[in-house]
Figure 1 (spheres, rainbow, N blue to C red):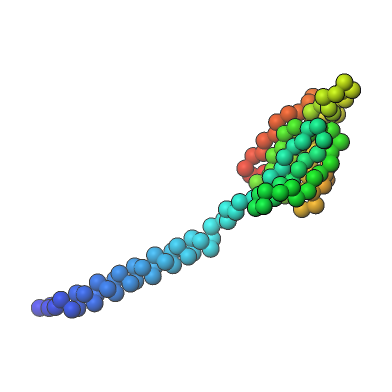
Figure 2: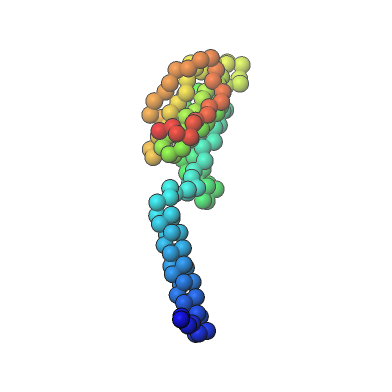
Length: 136
């Protein structure tokens, strides 16, 4: 006949609770190591149509970190999910009496160098741009 007193039950319960706590901590640690990071992006890209530039704002300090010159007035901008490129659409050249049309371009900006790496010719007067989550 098995006999268990109150002390052996308390010791057993403490052991089970300690093991469960250690296992739970291990699961949380492993999940943290293998999960993908979700950091806030450090910069915002603001199109300045009249000055034909893109302002790069450091979101930690809320100051302009760089100004990227463009040949035509930028309208829309979108950053790739990996943060390596910014795609900027161009509208009309300016709103003055000497209106020049942008040649249907989208500029691609490298976020490391803050410079235009290429331009893509698209349809008439692009305005908005969107990037899918799985873009490279």
